[in-house]
Length: 493
Image (cartoon, rainbow, N blue to C red; front, top):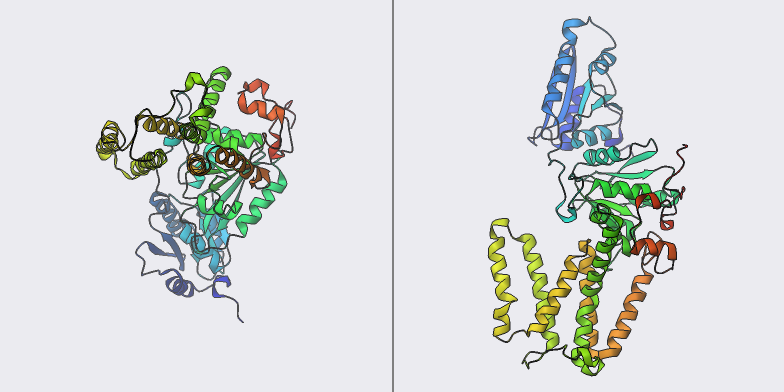
């Protein structure tokens, strides 16, 4: 068999290259692909580009420089070197194959070819359409930086390097997707991050065999951690550069995927998904109090409804002082059905809020008040206690920093409710036990999901419940297996 056409060296004939571009990427058919032809010192020079991905101002400046050769230089046999010297740009890369040429054009670079030369030059004049860095909606803080990651991988790595000016910070670029050829960068600090973890991540990304990654980071996650139908998130996402930089300094490895504003943090545990930047923007005492309140909300989001429903089914379990707990009026609809209807109703509203344009949000709020409110109670659909406890559980769900974790906890709550409805007290006890064992068995990139609770690590568990002051946090988490355990070294490099 012959060598694949795309792997062939770049031919010396520019007409042959042009015909290849017409056949391969649709030059002349796709309106956004173009070629600009110049005559320089009696030789042809061609520029290939993709409109919309290139900065037009940079391209015009380069064109002027190349055309200016005719006015300032004499005929020369080494026109290619002359052209390369006139490309006044910080990123000029030589290319030797047609495959490289096609990839670079479709990535937004301009390609320069000179007649009679079996090579080309790629100039990075990319200017991807996108928004400016702004505070992410899901990770707002009262006090702190207001910048956030965007859909441009170059901007995202720059925002991270701005916070860590260490010569040992590395961003290794990879490529995935047979058709999309999506850029993926692995970020880590060389003398801190665990090399085995870096190698595993690189191996998994390089083994991705798929047409494209239109869902960007989520697709990479599914190839990386093999999550299957486990609802619990095995990696943490963040859109805040300060959060990402903090995890880099702890020894974590970050994954940046082009076209996504979310950065993947690995490895992570259950408790990583309960952290929020606000805790570290307040004093340690306030941060600890906020953290305890959040933990209480998460516990309520899972266990409050099943526990209250158990007391409804078996009032004898209640101490005399709180025997008032439970519905005081009869209803034709079983309590468990009411709970499921109200809980799923709130989920409907949450989904609707995502899809509802801002001008219609007020109207949706009025509908919500009718659906789950006084009118629903008056018509006998719900008893007041059901609305109360479902609302408290929903608040606990909303107080969970990770959206993925909050949905997984909601699913666990519904399963526990079903078990309590079928088996009463044994259902809650056995269901809770199975739930904890399920979480214990989860491993993300060989990291125990419930660490430092299981396996037990008292020192690390203390830092989970108490937010230490920065001068007192001198040791990196052992779970990342960092090369350098001290986070505040003496300063010797």
